[in-house]
Image 1 (spheres, rainbow over the protein chains, first blue to last red):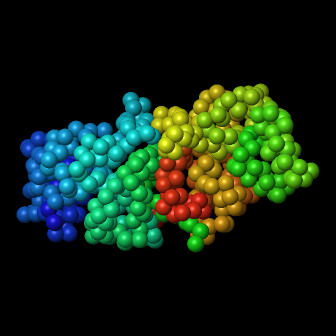
Image 2 (tube, each protein chain N blue to C red; image 1 turned 90 degrees about the horizontal axis):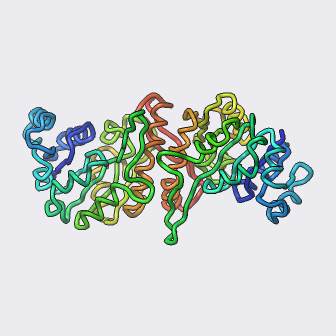
Length: 218
Length: 218
């Protein structure tokens, strides 16, 4: 499948590497066509890895992944272009982290809105699915780093789009029954609001190699 | 031990029942001394269960539990009185849930502040420990409702106070190694911000009988 990735940070490159390894063809999109990181990535990725602008990546992808920081996602997707996102599954992996001068993390938007919802509102013809924002990049594409059952989440308005994302997560190694569907895109609020808790857990555990699982009454 | 509970809702009464069952002496505090729910609770609780005002409960307790809604906790604790909380472990179980006319839940405070922090700031002589706000009331006092390992969290500035809370959680049935210490009271932000996610999980699982656990790399 042809996949466009918006954002060339650790998350974008990790997803791009995995998708190419799985046999997909990827365009890694950055703000400017001559972004050095994206160029370097495409060079080592082989014939199925390309680089380009946000618009190039969006035009290329049958599925588009938003791997930008949540604080700049709307701007990046505007540059990608609504017409190039229309009708496509748009996987939103972002978290809107804001770092204070003192190093304290907060979120913007938060509480009564989320990046996932904002994207779906501004791009109503895109089929937005929020997922994978609750995990470190290595775990996103290699859930087997952890033993036992652990979970990833999807939220979005379009059931077929969510099914397509669950299939893609399956290629990454996530068993279908480890993917919890939290409902419509408004659930992106809760998923994004996990980040402060996740950061505390990271400090407590001393690693980013952990993930949520649940005990429930049978 | 003598324990004062601020708040007579489901959480307050569930904690009160368990503490009396464990042999502690409890005063359940409400806004007015003649609160019918608190009176009824005290009548059926036996000789170790009392009711009174917020101030009565705070004066009575060697340890004080805040089981009010987080949106009114400061007001309730002001009525309890700073001088009656000074030097005591103050266990904050609250979540600051705000329900919109459409039934959508948000939090106030959120993101750059939390109820736990506000309480500690306004009552600097109280030894605030945030805990148990991530669970349904029945699970708080009976973790064995779920099989397997699952976790509860503590956050606060005072290590001895946290140790005392871990001991109390142990009486409730929480093994010490299931209690994760997330650090200072600022971690209350992340704990309170779990609530929207928790509510989505409740809808997905169709029960409140679930809890967080974690897989991590060994």
